[in-house]
Image (cartoon, rainbow over all chains, first blue to last red; front, side, top):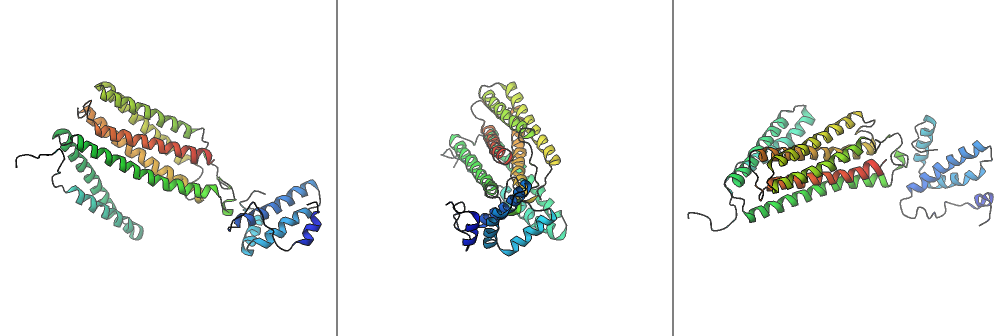
Length: 86
Length: 261
């Protein structure tokens, strides 16, 4: 599993099985990847490093999450009312 | 047909079950009338009828048992079963609210921020007033046991003192909890956290008030020489209920106040 993130992103078709979320209800899978993307972005920006590795999380949440949820959460983040910790 | 040839109690006809049922009808329909037509008359009428029913029904039971001697050992056994079954039903009542709490807190939804306590909620510090409340109720469990032993040993004055102390501790808990409710930084309307917190602790507080009232009635009866060292089931029932209230608090404290913070 020593392929780098660029190769993984090129091979991407859809979100792979994530053993952390094995059941039918995938809400938490969507939530976790959404939150992880923005946390990753914030952390790497703070270090001044390229945020390309974060794109994995973005691909996953874009595949999994209902569009209305993404829009709602994006709006909340802009308003400063997003309930998750980023 | 001069007297009964068995030890059971064939109760005389009584109007209180009917007035109790009417009170229940008036209170429930009164609640609906209040919600839709802004009048509390019907509900208040139901409440008054309920209080009158309780007073007279239980007064009659005391007359039948303490003054007329109808509470023979088999009758008392039936009363014991009855109280135990009632308390068991109350356990199930609270079990529902604990279910609701754990359902929401074990898997917090994205709307809450995926965390518990939810984003924006500052829970009460479990090691401040809630811990004091725990100590107060545990102490009251000790004093009610002291009262029981005093009654069984014929120690009239000690029984009165320990029972009075138990009731005072109950009032102290209620007063502390009322203050906590007033000062809390969140309300019942603050999402599922507020709902589960105030419904569970609120019903518990109501049961503390009911239990304190039951104990107060026992205090009045003890002062008026109703209890003997061998036969004091009314007091035992009150003590069981009080211990139940204490145990529910312990679960509330550990689940909602401590783990839930």
